[in-house]
Length: 192
Ligand SMILES: Cc1cc2nc3c(=O)[nH]c(=O)nc-3n(C[C@H](O)[C@H](O)[C@H](O)COP(=O)(O)O)c2cc1C
Image 1 (cartoon, protein in one colour):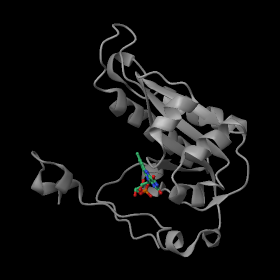
Image 2 (cartoon, protein in one colour; image 1 turned 30 degrees about the horizontal axis):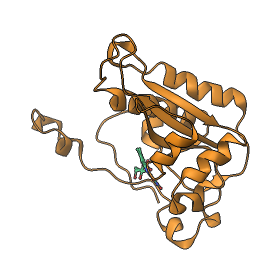
Image 3 (cartoon, helix red, strand yellow; image 1 turned 90 degrees about the horizontal axis):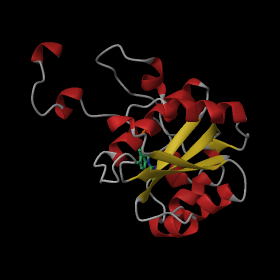
């Protein structure tokens, strides 16, 4: 059930990407893990500070440790994801030691690049905010300047039937509001 519509011609990967919860248990080739991290590497960032950091759970014990941080609802489906990545945003500029107000913004860009490269390689990703942040900081000995911001599940799409009924009902690409509704000021009505 894909009822997404597009009002402009955009990149194939952006059109097609979505966040399934049904993962196959197939392991991810390390070449592809390296590839998605390389895509994240080339995200733009304020002063080129690259405030994103990754804790890569491609095998135990790290994968299991990240899994243990997830909320019960996320664990229900993420248990099948072969790779779990904790994204940590560095809150201070390395150059000056001052607050970097764009740490979250730039880490989000890196995740977006990672997700699109994953899709291009036939992989799926699913971002999660639902995890225990304080426990993550304690477990990985993060400082107060390192913000555990999201967990990413990475792997191959599986059969939706592996999901419980509630999650099966949500297993399709979601829709979006119109681009014009996201433009507070400056939308050109001739684009409609
Ligand atoms: C930062 C972030 C946090 C999210 N947290 C969760 C989560 O905890 N559990 C979940 O099932 N999905 C989570 N999602 C997935 C979003 O609900 C999903 O990306 C959104 O509905 C758009 O759907 P699409 O990615 O399929 O296009 C999260 C996504 C992002 C980017």
